[in-house]
Amino acid sequence: MPLAGRVKELKSSSTLAITALANKLLSEGVDVVSFGAGEPDFDTPDYIKQAAIQAIESGFTKYTPSTGTSELKEAIRKKFKTDNNLEYRPEQIIVSSGAKHCLFNIILAMIEEGDEVIIPVPYWVSYPEMVRVAGGECRFVATEAGNNLKLSARALKQSLSPRTKLLILNSPANPTGSVYSRNELEEIAEICRDNKIYVISDEIYEKLIYDGASHISIASLNNEIHDLTFTVNGVSKSHAMTGWRIGYCAVPSLEIADAIKNLQDHSTSNPCSISQKAAFEALRASGEWTIKMRDEFSGRRDYLLSLMNEIPSLSYVKPLGAFYLFCDISQTGLASRDFSMRLLNEEKVAVIPGDGFGRDDYIRLSFTMRPETIKKGIDRLKKWVRQLPKRS
Image (cartoon, rainbow, N blue to C red; front, side):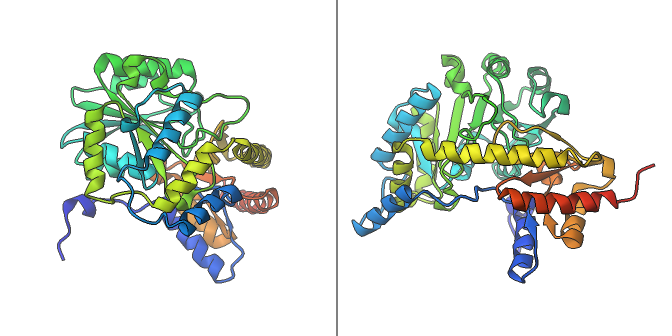
């Protein structure tokens, strides 16, 4: 059967592929240590579960407005104001079936054939595929380890062309855990403002930041960049609600909001009504639970780094946010997929190859597991790396 070109060129997710293989081995009773998870290992808090149960018992199981209930939009509006110093009208807020859905909607609504989208490398695996589905062209911009693999204003300026329409910015970042400072964002915002470049600011890991670093929403810097920015967030990472599938975004204008609403009307319609009630409770309650989870991840990160420091042939960018370690494997002489598959087959340790993130000389490790599991996995990794042939 002939397939449409837009899907024939799509690449499978390396994140999901390696995780699926690791899960298969686990189901067969194999003792696999998986550093592949892109989600917290914490369970959704009970107070959020109870809100969902109450929604079911009260019959809140019908259609809602396709872009979300007014109740949830108001909670999101207040969240943006309180946490991010951002002002939006409820009509500018779109609730979707996950932050990924928000990103997909924005790109489909904004990008046409021939439009260029700037994507810093490394990037989250789905960004390029979304752009390609929309008919756009990816302009990948290299970053340097010395700058914590973050996009510099200089590199951004050099990458612009007359067809550049959009920049995708992720802070805290997947896969690196890097966090952009206010000064870095101000320099990027100035270039986007001067060249009328729209920005998608993916802030899904906003609540998971360590070492006293601060999260800054680029749209909060001034009115000009506010009117060019799509701010994307959700409850998946902050409240361990990945499977509930609720993301949200704020868009620069009512015209764009209407376009995305129409797109969602004719694709998914509303996000799950029950999940919306749960998300409302997540945003309404205090952030104490999230702070406890963040502090736990901070300790796990520090423990993982202390173990990784014992493997001299591997290096890394210290993550200030999210729950990933992006590790440089170039000294091993192996490409990331070969490294990952051999490590899984030979030592039963699952890591994510970096080629899906645009860096074939890196792997990604998640630290969303207990310290004893981290130690077991890194002990196996250290043993395996030491027996690799030395590069001449």
